Image (cartoon, rainbow, N blue to C red; front, side, top):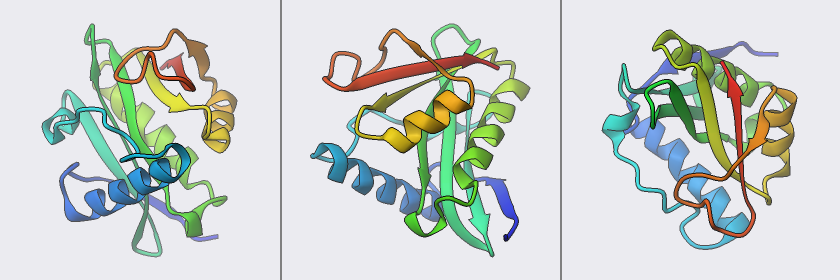
Length: 154
């Protein structure tokens, strides 16, 4: 198995945006529409208020995820987790999740939360196996049918 390399990248960098477009296309296929209409500003993913990470296999970008500050300054919100289909099942998402959590922890965040949809069973399984628990819905999709929110202490 090739080693997964995780690197911090700007949210608006070309490789980040290519992965994000793929993530949104995947969500669009599952839910319809654009995939995710949550308002996002690239500046939200810059230290110390956030970070965006890209995973590489054999030098190719294959996954991503980031966090941005949420509310009280002690909470991070996970956004734009994605693994390219060809790289799935190789530990990319778990590696990105661990790196995102570590980045948020290094910036003083004590908790991490996320929104997910009920048509993403593989994501739900990963989050719950990583210790995430259901929390009250929040954010842009809090009242949308199928919205599931999760959180865990870092």
